[in-house]
Image 1 (cartoon, rainbow, N blue to C red):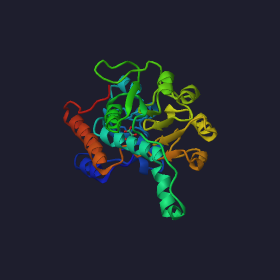
Image 2 (cartoon, rainbow, N blue to C red; image 1 turned 135 degrees about the vertical axis):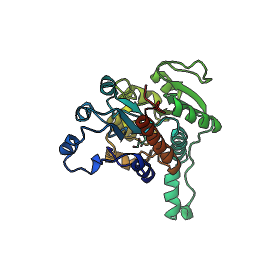
Image 3 (spheres, rainbow, N blue to C red; image 1 turned 90 degrees about the horizontal axis):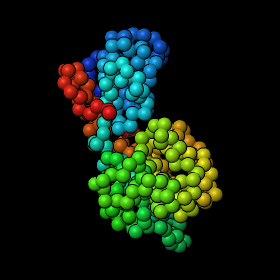
Image 4 (cartoon, rainbow, N blue to C red; image 1 turned 45 degrees about the vertical axis):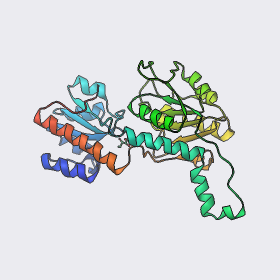
Length: 305
Ligand code: 8YV
C-alpha cells in the first residue's frame, strides 16, 4: 500500500491481505527490496506507481488506484509487464460536479467574501456590492466525460447555456460542440476544466484561451493543475485580463503561488472534489473490490483502458 486510505479500506483490506505500508517506511529503497513477493498494490492517482517502482515488484499483478485520475501511474509500463490497473470512476462524478457548481456560485455570488463581510459587521455600514449571476450565462465544459456530463446537467438546472470542447464531438449529446478550445472560450462566460492530465492536455488552457475567455470570463478547474498555465493565469488575474478563477487543483499542490491568496477574484479549494464521506467510502469499496476480485482470479470491476 503506497498511501494511506480511509479506515474502512484499511480494515476491509486487512481481512484478506497482509498490508505493507510504503508511506510509513523511512528507507523506501530497503522497504521495496523486501517487496519482491508483492502481488497487489493499492495506491492513488497522485503518488501512483512509476516504472522504477514496478522494477522492484516483479510479482506485481494488479495496481488498484483510489481516484478516477491515474496520471501518477505509468500505465504503459504496467501494460508491458502484464500488470492490470484499476481506478474508481463513476462513484465520484456527483461529488465533483457538485463542487464545480459550488465553486462557480461562490465566485459569482461572492459567497466567501460576503460571509467575511457579514461576520466583520460591515453590513451595519451599508449593503454588499451587487454581484454577477449564473442564470443565462454560458459555460464551456472542457472534457464532457462522466464528470463533465454531471456538471452540464447541474448547469442546466441553473438555467445556464452549456457548450463543450473535447477531442471529438459526441453524437448523442445535445450541447453545441466547439472543435477549437479558443473559440469556445470566446463564446463562454465560464470554462470548467475536467480533463485528465496527459501529454495532450498539459497547459491546454494557455494565454490564448484565457485571453479569449477575457476580463468578464472565469476559469474553473477540477481536473488537474497541469491543465492550466498557472503563472500566466495568475498574471492575467492580477491585471484583470482574466475575470476570475475557481480552483480545486494546482500545478504543484498543495503548494501554489501565494499571489493567488491575495486575489479577490479567486476562490480556492484544497482538492476537495471527491472528498465527501459518502464518495470516499464508495471509492474505497471499489479499491477493495478490485483487489479481492484479483486475488480470487475473477474479472476486475473497473480496469483502466
Ligand atoms: C482524489 C482525484 O483526490 O479521482 C481523482 O482523480 O484526484 C481525487 O478524487 C484522489 O484520488 C485521492 O487521492
